Length: 405
Ligand SMILES: Cc1cc2nc3c(=O)[nH]c(=O)nc-3n(C[C@H](O)[C@H](O)[C@H](O)COP(=O)(O)OP(=O)(O)OC[C@H]3O[C@@H](n4cnc5c(N)ncnc54)[C@H](O)[C@@H]3O)c2cc1C
Image (cartoon, rainbow, N blue to C red):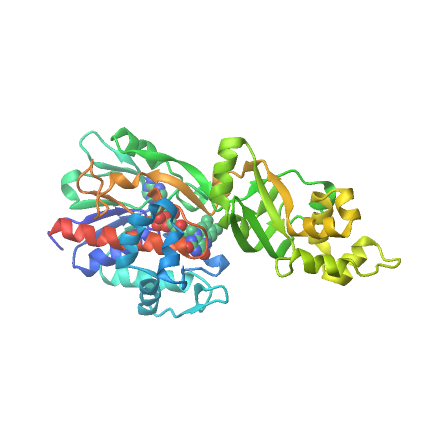
């Protein structure tokens, strides 16, 4: 039995596991606690979509995805960046590949093999995992208080060499991260930004014609909001829209809705053709064809896309070829609200970045570190989330080792 006090890590998601990896590799004992019956449920859920670990675009472009958190996140990525994510997976026996869009996935396209190998390594290094231990804050003597099926369990301040909070954000609470920790940190004077949905859907009002396409992806489109464009796809849902191209613009859409109550999105149904080229094709003689047939034959527009054109254009626009071509290139969709945080892929908000030092230790709570999505940064989907989560776990892990020395 080691007589050295253990490091306590609360939260066994990718941030907490990464820190446990670094600290245990440095030879320090680690006690890892999680509220759920098993670790890293959100990571496993991310595996359902193939587990997009990172992106292989140029580092200068990659860092721009973190908006105003760039200066801080750049410091993390300098230590543990895109290539480190791939090397880390390889070291666990998991090969990765670059998909056509530049996104990086494990060859098996799932999270379970990576998680199993990771937990096995931590277990070999004697990291003690305590599941069903929900941290409920600090007691009067600074002790960490856990609620467990066996009742309350305390870890006294003198029994922990240092503490890492890696409690995740506040989306998908059924996977374990419910943001309830925010109140306990605020009580200790730590500044937090409110949680908001990031990478989530938006509401709009659809007609019954459009609702018939709920669940249909619209592929090969381009979306524009306030000068920023994203090519890709999105999904019609019963309440509105969701999907990759929407998530890429979700921050500016959310902020516009917060300011004005709604946001205007422009949809280009045929981004590979210019308006003039569309006009030329649609000007061909139509004969006795209906407009729907003409659109399908001349420019391949049918199904949900054709219904969306009808939904978002006027009869006058559709009656005149050049106006129709212009409408196809820029259909205006009004979004009236963000979908609830619980449904979003990730959350914005959390512990303000200037509350932690370079080692990710809370300035107001010496010996207490933070990592992962609970810190206030956000990024679109595309592997940017997991990369920064793991990088911050890496930074906190090394920060704690430094602190202990
Ligand atoms: C459906 C879905 C798909 C996703 N796909 C991708 C993807 O392909 N690529 C990508 O980059 N990102 C993806 N993400 C986002 C990514 O999974 C998260 O950003 C990442 O898991 C956050 O890591 P974390 O360690 O900070 O927090 P989490 O993974 O949320 O882990 C936090 C842990 O803390 C525990 N915890 C919370 N509160 C307490 C408490 N009070 N006491 C004890 N334990 C507690 C939780 O149980 C949890 O295990 C996806 C997310 C979702 C929901």
